Amino acid sequence: MKRIGILTSGGDAPGMNACIRAAVRTALANGLEIVGIRRGYAGLIEGDSMPLDRTTIRNIIHLGGTILETSRSQEFTTREGRARAAESITQADLDGLILIGGEGTFHGAMLLAAEWGTVLVGVPGTIDNDVYGTDASIGFDTAANCVLDAIDRIRDTARSTEYLFYVEAMGHHTGFLALESGIAGGAEELVIPEEPISIAELGAQLKKGFTIGKKSAIVVVAEGDKPGRSFQIASEVRNYLDYEYRVVVLGHLQRGGPPSVRDRVLGSKLGVEAVTALQEDRSGCMVGEVKGEIVYTPFEDAWKKEKPLDSDLKRIFTLLSD
Ligand code: F6P
Image 1 (tube, rainbow, N blue to C red):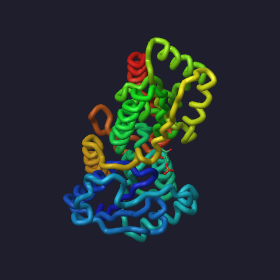
Image 2: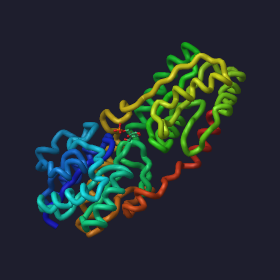
Image 3: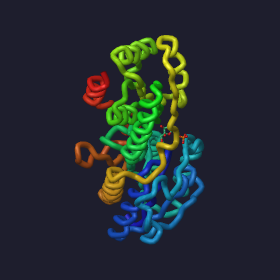
């Protein structure tokens, strides 16, 4: 292996730059050339690349987003699109490629590897943390802290005004961000796709809290498949509970900002391991970390298998939020 590429795909996540930096430094230390593919799979199809060396990756470890930029390429979901991508990999003379992204990225990677025999290694990078084969994905910790910061601020105003607040966190079809920030922020209720709660039940739970003397409450809602759904939830709960409420949808605010210590360390670790995995011929898998150990998960599992929420954390939330 002489020359490799690296790209970021899907939603950007804080810590991706730490991972790029680590992969570049590791590649150079091992005598490999490395190039950056810009704008994810869209850039791969178009052959949009940039040279990476010690200078290009200087002073990026503290930056959110991704210096390589990213995309959700529709064209790459087609066989023709992937054929163009494979062709541009050959043109660029790449012996292997590192992909930093989420489930969608690994689905695409699995197809590209199967159709064209491309040598690929993945790294989990998404604030949603919904990738099977790793305890945390790059960006999750920073985003969870962002949600927590919002909850803390909202608690100040909730206490002062005696409002009921709904705070909506990202998470696509999972509740990882909502659950961890909900525990850390002392939220009263949680609405997550993994354990749906009826509006009547939510209203009853909140009412119980107000009956025993609570003057305000915070409900953390995971966006699910419908960003902005907390507006609807809040207005429906009103049928069961007549209480002044406000809704805060955090949206893409959660994706930006300087990466936390944990995300910089995880990004650095997985960046190093991704290059090592390419050199050890471990193509077709994602490099993750489970209980402190490096694990390799086939793309198919990383994409298809559902990552369960930590049931113990859910139990702890229920116990402490009463
Ligand atoms: O990065 C993951 C994620 O933030 C999801 O939680 C969210 O549903 C989605 O990306 C939205 O991203 P975009 O607006 O880039 O499509």
